[in-house]
Length: 187
Length: 294
Image 1: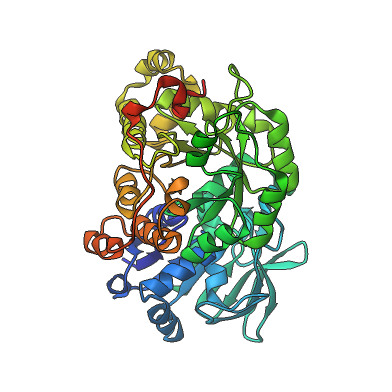
Image 2: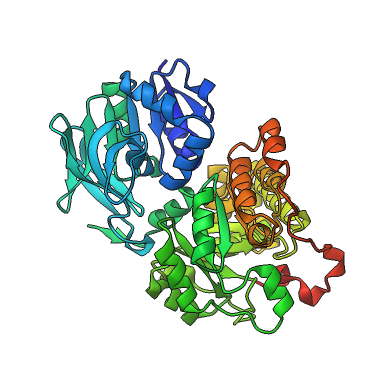
């Protein structure tokens, strides 16, 4: 059974755990360093990226997670998780700085501009429900990064080898296909 | 087709706040302190609840200038309060682009019979509740997030504890009932029947439920998490304490690690004096904000 950690400092932790368990994985809540042992993959969930960053620093999790990403541990970042993974942020200092993408925060405006839409993603499937909440988007990608999906001209799903970054929240819907793609083809 | 303001988008916003602390602030400087401490959102107000108590008179929506100032100061979501049933205050806040509106009993109600029909708005709403009937009526009107009412501005956790225990006990009861018992329970609670069916199916409330109204220390915040709150609002507890930066940070850490008692001991050391509290028994019925709402 695959052991997948979910960073559990704040945010949509429960939803990711339920989805991973439904896909037959063992889901581990990661709150401290020791929870990072023997994982086959790690999910950085949606939430508030500034809050998560403060807590990553205070509980000495930033360096260990960065180290694991550099050693090749598969990671999926959704929304705030994508912001944590990015090597570059527009108008902000990066956090883990491991995924070769440049990310813009709150790039669709405030909460009243948050939306849902159905997406066709060739590598994943058709009619995938995508919920964007004060979402970021990927402004630019490095040469080894594969763009998996765009919406209205903005990159919203991309893969940099073992790292998958997603602007929206697959964990908020009942559709498991994005998480399944991560678990079955990357972990 | 791109759709804004859907139930999923509005409830989802609250899901992203889970495990976090939302702090009351009255200006840009306090908002920045809250953000630096790790708040997941701030509530922009003209006065914190304890000062609303002191000031007396009619408490209304904050001056839009203050809300605007706070929105300009931080990148985390900004919430603001509208009076119960005040359609125009709510529409004004929505037009300004606040991320969440609290239809709040902390302000003087504008309507003593009807709450806002929150499903009509693109912006999501949070509302207070003391029991499952009240919680379900607010969800029925379109609230995307709940919080306990507690007793705001008192620094006394006793009412918030009463409310979270009550709601969760009533949810457990509904979950354990058979389908044929739900209609009578709906009648007794004053709750929409379909919502009770949904609660039974999910095994929990369909929206996030935070603690609010009396949180004053890191241990208070952790207690509310222990009792099943999804996160914590702190009103007067931070900026009425002796050392707001330290209190704010410690409350954030205690909320994340609410079962790590050694850590809570560590972060609670030498925090200085918390806000001065009020014994609820000293408050007359007309001074209890929790009685507002129907």
